[in-house]
Image: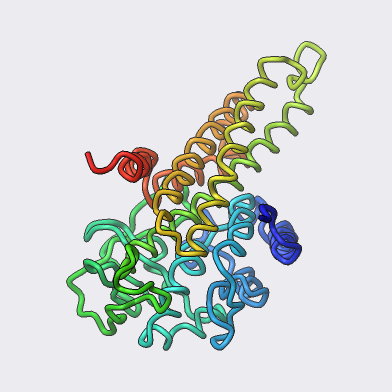
Length: 348
């Protein structure tokens, strides 16, 4: 059995990292904080479409790459590492496979793959804010066990986030739906006797939670790297602060959490890609571990940076606040731990 990623998957990751390093540095993230319209870089979005990232999970017939979540997970990790602004999770990881698996949804699919149609999803309750709802051309909303597609729905009000580059708005769910995705949303849904039959909203939620967990891995890695660099350069009492054992222990503990979370995230990607009956358990374990790893990495980074880490002028807060926003997105730690417990022990 092969446990490593393929050369093609690693090359896809490396290409994404190279693009993001060139076009999504800290200055680009800061610009997204100040941009009151799009909140992300349309030029970078088009480049991601040209590279195939936006359509990675779409079939080749629609202009996509026909890949799986296992192929996309490393790219999502890189987007977290760059703190990339934009609805990559909602659009590429969740909405595109939903559109691809519905005959009515395919009217937007090619545009979504090409980066010409922006799609986001809202799978929470009626009052839950929807990420990037104001910027989207189409919003996919959960309605019981099915999904409804609402082209350019009016936003009721914006919802502020601690991460100002992550936009969200509450929608009026009573608005008339112009188009509804098929009740049998997933073309790859197993037969009716399978435990996954009809789990359309559940699978979409799992994709979102997995993608967010992957981004949290990348954020954690970048926070640790930033802190190591700072600890080497910052001197106190004539020596780098990184030479002190206490600082080393903090960073080692954070790295250990990240390395424990990483295989959980990769396993969850495998489970979704292969429609494993236990995929929800695996996804929840991954999201819970990624939440904890990212939270610890952010706390350690802030502690080791000291007073400079609290300032708006330093780049640290851009990554730290993205962690704070994503650790509660697509289910917080308590929610996912409860799902793991229920999967192992049965309902309470």
